[in-house]
Image 1 (cartoon, rainbow, N blue to C red):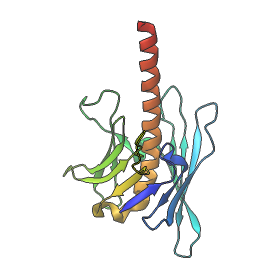
Image 2 (image 1 turned 180 degrees about the vertical axis):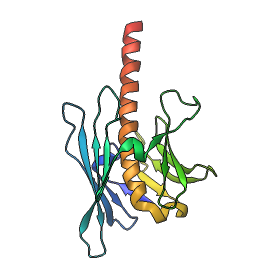
Image 3 (image 1 turned 30 degrees about the horizontal axis):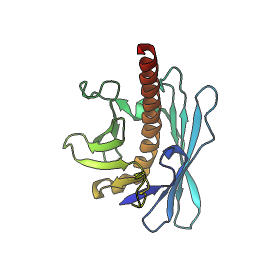
Image 4 (image 1 turned 180 degrees about the horizontal axis):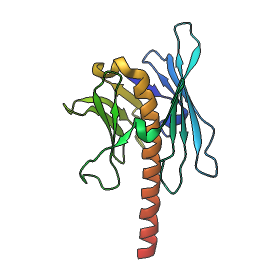
Length: 193
């Protein structure tokens, strides 16, 4: 299943659409506050064609850390680090990493972050479950622009709600890490000039 995103640069402010164009999920948030914190509300299309609240993610960013961020689903209110535990990529990508997540099926999954995307794999088998494909643009080309999309393999479709919630959280973290790395590279280049 492919879910297109209406905003590739801000998945926490995006509609998630089925190939037919039907909006299945909505992630909405105001712009970041001066303290770096935002709240994302995620809603889901119900069978009666109305949207029902699914989850809220409160990001609390202080000095690049999201350790006090929270995820609320119904009456459950947890620290994000309890839902998505830090894993270890054994130094493959310094500064990047993985977050471990136990799905509703009791299986452990891993969201792996790179500078370009996030991917969810089944931890024991290493089987990909979800891959984020960023928007593809071709400068000076007549090729059609491909919107960003989430590719959810059949093995993950039973937990689509959880995938959307954890993906939105992970993409915000990845975006912050990407921005921080770009600023550090720029400052380093200026200092070395």
